[in-house]
Length: 240
Image (cartoon, rainbow, N blue to C red; front, side, top):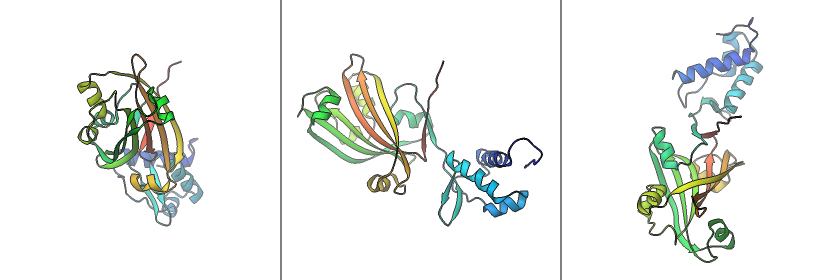
């Protein structure tokens, strides 16, 4: 498995071997890897080389470390292609996962000046504020807060929110969501969101803001989400 005469670096050979075992299912999520010392002794390589391979695999999301306990196989990240405007529910179903939501807050309150500007409504117009934990096969993926004009998106209920807001907007209200702009920033989890997402405080997360519009430019929604960076990744296809 390790060819010391190869021009390919040893740490990279070890990485690829571990990746192969994970992709073939011989190493499953949650499995503990043997200690660095055992790899070093088995292949007659330095522990520094093993550590370098492990570190790269942690960075790529294949492995994770628990302080004082060892190195484990990570759950595979859900990949979302940033091409086309889809809802969380549609994304999960497309990947064969069961989408779900845990409703934290469902309120109607007057729009602040900033919210009125984002939704192109008058200040103090009614706005829905909906906070949910978004789940895939029961596992928390994101903490999502959605803001909608109650005059435009009328009749929302907790039952509708627990299913799909996009389906309600397009199928029941017959409003067509046409396009959106999205901003993604890296951050770390604070205490409150860490508890809801079931990650440790300070874990890497992605803050995402999406503004969605109808084809005439009317704002439909503002969504602010915090995604687990250990379970989710975004991919962009670009053409020169």
